[in-house]
Structure formats: structure tokens, C-alpha cells
Amino acid sequence: MNSMDPDPAATPDLEPGGGVPSGSTPPDTAQTSGLSAPEPRTSHRFPPTGVAAVIAVIALVAVFAVVAIVLIASLG
Image (cartoon, rainbow, N blue to C red; front, side, top):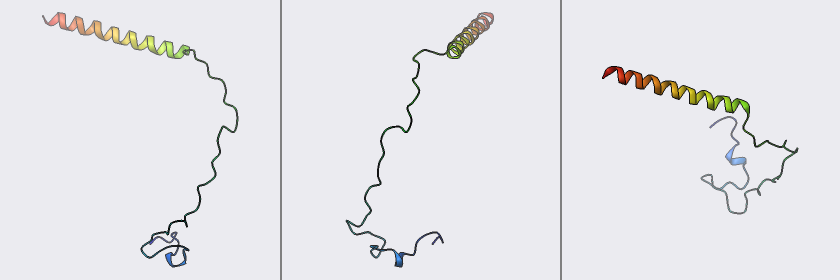
């Protein structure tokens, strides 16, 4: 047993074997809803860095395709 664990003999409402009788469990903790501060409005535009990343990926795929076609053509 860990030294941090409570002593089962001193724990109220604990049955032999570690069970707890119904009705002796604590109620659910209080819930809070909503945000503590208003969230900033998000824009629905695609950022310029995202556009640049998409263009870079398309260019990389195009270069890869051209090199693959040239290599395949040179084999035949």
C-alpha cells in the first residue's frame, strides 16, 4: 500500500472488500458553463502562409512528377 493512500479502516462508509454502499458517494461536482472571457472573432479567410504552403506542395508534386516521367522515359 502506498503511503499516500488513506487507511481503509479509517475511511467512512467503506465496506469490507473496498465497496461503497449506495447513497454514500459524494454528489457530482459543480459544473460551470460558458467561457470566462469572450473569445476573439476568428476570420474565415485562408491565411497567406497557408496559400504559400499549398502552392509549395503543388510545385513539389509537379517537380516530382516531371522527374519521374523523365526517368521512366529514359529507361525505355
